[in-house]
Amino acid sequence: MPKSVVDFLYGYLLFASDNLKHPKVRFLLTPIKFGENSVRYPEVEIKILGEKSRYKGKLGFTARESWACFDSDGKLHCKKGEFPFDDVIKCLVAVFEKDDPFTEYGKVTGNCNFCRKTLSVPESLYLGYGKICAKRFGLKWGGTNN
Image 1 (cartoon, one colour):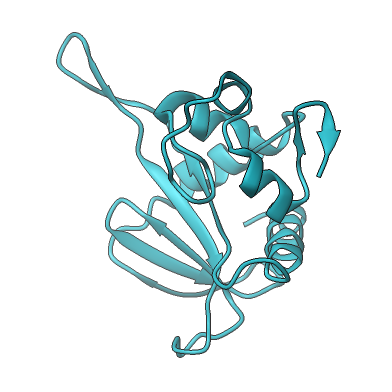
Image 2 (cartoon, rainbow, N blue to C red; image 1 turned 60 degrees about the vertical axis):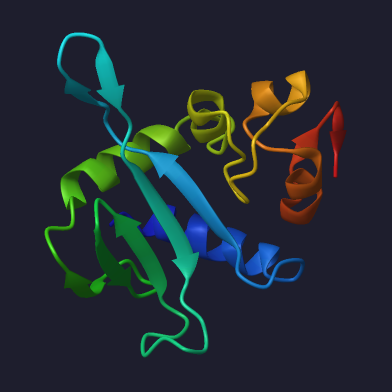
């Protein structure tokens, strides 16, 4: 895992943990086509593993019914199942090349990237996250930096 991506995620989730008990972010992986008109967007969920985990303080990645755990220096610590490393790394690198890496999940799913609540306000649908989560994560919403 590229160290710059791990550093950003780790720092960002640590920042958010001041306002949230269990902060996590979600990103969409490469879409999978099912038939002619059906597309599924698998997701990866990333969080800092908590007190009850034997890997406390490490970055936990869950994707496609498997998981992996990375040290803060980006080295793989452990994994379970067929974790899609290549897809996750490509996805994260592509996402972090954008101005706001947190918008795509909400735009595609209609749910907040952070809390998964349904987005209904046009501003939230455009940004991919709601006003409350924007404030908790220190993100822009409605022309202001919360």
